[in-house]
Amino acid sequence: MENWSLVSICVLLGLTARWAVSLNSYSGAGKPPMFGDYEAQRHWQEVTYNLPVHEWYFNTTDNNLNYWGLDYPPLTAYHSLLCAHVAKLINPDWVELHASRGHESYGHKLFMRATVLVADLLIYIPAVVLYSFYVSEGSNKKKVCAVLCILLYPGLILIDYGHFQYNSISLGLALWGVVGLGLGWDVLGSLAFVLSLNYKQMELYHSLPFFCYLLGKCFKQGLAGRGLFLLVKIAVTVLVTFALCWLPFLSDPGQVLQVVHRLFPVGRGLFEDKVANTWCSLNVLIKIKTILSTDTQLYFSLTTTLLAILPSSIKLLMKPTLWQFKLALVNSSLAFFLFSFQVHEKSILLPAFMLPLFLKDGLLVPCVVTSLAFLFFAVYLLSALEHCSEDKLRLGPYRRLLICMPHMDLGRVTRWKVSVFYFSITAMAGLSFMSVALAPPAQLPDLFPLLVSVFSYLHFLGLLLYFNMVQIAEPPQSVRKNQKKSN
Image (cartoon, rainbow, N blue to C red; front, side, top):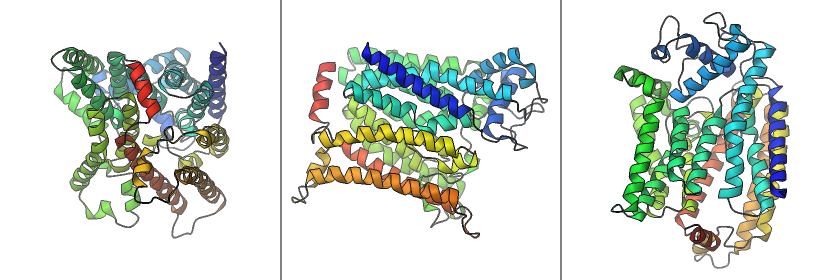
């Protein structure tokens, strides 16, 4: 009973933070002719409500794709249509074809924020609570702190309530998939993940771990017996779910090709804006987009992405345990973000800090407040390092490395981890202050966003190397015991 009271408090705090942020500015407010991501979501409601399905992804007289054309999978379009029906009941002017373009009003702002809040309540928040309490490890106090860390993470709150990206739906569905697999409900987990992939194509970042874990599990159970039955069940579930999501487009191959073309806009180039991945950071020294053709950039990024994912995926396929699966999700998403083609800065919501984006949207104060709340609980969790054993700290890989350095103390490694964390926070706070208080040199107008981008990139690259090293090593003894109990 006490646990559920704590959960209720966590959810209430998360909702309070979301609604407080929702009273602030939003992306593109009062900035014609495009009006930002707020207008994009409203326009998709206008298009899906007033036009037939076969026109949603095509350029027509009533659907100018250069003005916020749909570029997400069908489930996003259906969600826009559902919101549009509700909007029509409240105020028909909000979704009137052509005449509603650029519409801005207080009532509509509250409606849009409410649609994000409802999505959080129905999909994201329940998934976070279930994952933290039933799939993750640790004491109840640590689980509560984990819930608060996730629900108070500023990136997701400020982007979803300032840009109306509904990332909580795709991330929530993917997390439901993780919960399903963690509890042994492989078919339901597969269903949830396919839905997330059909809501946002960025869930491809997590697709390979799901595939390798389930395939490895089928191999482990034997393809001549239970493993084959499981494989058939999962394959049928995936195919039927995809078919239902794409059903209105399947009658015409041209429709399917057009939707795919809208989902993967190769023509936009290797990267956009100051995204903290390899190509943008490398572009500071080598102008990749200038010296390489678009096709070469595409093939090169595809090759490097696959190479970066390969060690983690092979390990998971050979040893399909939940611990390996969770690490593979981290490694796969980081590899995709760092090396894949046309990465969007919002693709790394969970580990990223997107200060330049928040400054552009006038969300500095909410960013500071939510960041402080997030850091409070993160520091509490970090303080547990001082009381953890070598086994729980996943220091096995370091023990092997220290054979070459016998005088290096593992306790020193732990203290080094904590020091790096605090250094990162301090440095980012300094960059944040300079971005707000100082004017960049006239010849370098993008200096501060670029510094934030490169600084973040170094962190993400370090995390990719570290978590690959942890995954390839054997799991801690406590994890192995828990896995045996689960089996």
